[in-house]
Length: 286
Length: 207
Image 1 (cartoon, each protein chain N blue to C red):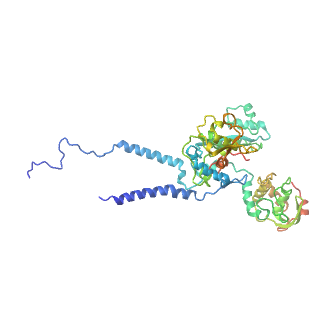
Image 2 (spheres, rainbow over the protein chains, first blue to last red):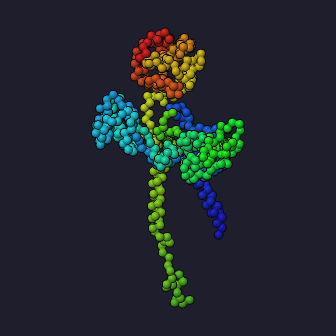
Image 3 (cartoon, rainbow over the protein chains, first blue to last red):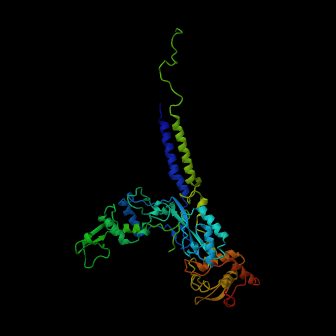
């Protein structure tokens, strides 16, 4: 029996389905994605990576940094934190209103809260937040010129580790050319490393000798991105400030190559510090 | 052929027979349960199959994303920014710097940042023509009044933006629709299209 046409049809349908699911549908969903404008600062996010940072992306790729570092923050949930934005003109009335929010407080407890304090009610979900808002409305705290603000707090293991503020979403990668998401985390996530560790010298030293900056780091040393050479008449401004065992012999210095500088510029450019509509977060305005 | 010949289609004694199903039933039940679980998962995290680019886990629905947005109580600032782009930026520029010698600036302008907004409400309502001094520099041009075409809310929003524009460094108080309404009523006798002059408007109260 000739099963050739069936085999062909079967593999054709399998390919067609995966093409639809992996290419066409995401394209339909995401083709109109634009950078978002921050209405407060007037800046757009994300922005194209330029100059040295752009070259650094190639160094990152060439050294397969993505083999051990991911660039994606996961978020598993969210909560709110109630903060007193304005204390108002009547602390007693505000304290009375706050006691209605949490009956475990006495008026004396509630009076301890002042302007700018978080109420620390624990994780507040959307429903609890709405009921607190109703309670406060009924207590007419608007008439006291007091205001309770609810800060939005994304939650998840990656966020707990301090790797990022919020979930990574498609818009974060708008300008990435062959995205280096990474699939393993032998090292920490790097999607926000430029904001977490802004210091250029720290990164250079870390690349040269990871154990010098992070105790017990399992990262290999990238010494080949640096050049050990005789000091000129004046020391090179880029030379690493090495101490102890790492310090080169007198008269010698360790300077980063162009690749190392580009890589660090790339790492510094990895920043996810903006909240987006689809991924809200409470972000301090610079 | 004698009738004693055995029927070839009949099973011989001791021969195994085929049951109705070759696969145990519990496998189907497990598969069904897994499929059911899968459907529930897709329903919970799949964003209702909406072809949207603004719906990601852990948020389930577009409504949920909308509900958790930071509250929009900004005194109309954002809406005002959009209005500014339509009506004002043509002359005063998106940067609020105006055009030197032609259109006066709004960013850092002593007119805009005055204690009360009542004079600039009048300017927006009826326009301003003739020589005017802004931040010590002289301008001579005409601005049309926008009071006929705009609601109190619109004027309040755009002035809230102009007075409080963070991008320009302006930090004056917001303007409420009630303030605009009060000025509009106070000037109800003024014929439409009659623009203010600097001398005239400086005779009106700031607050």
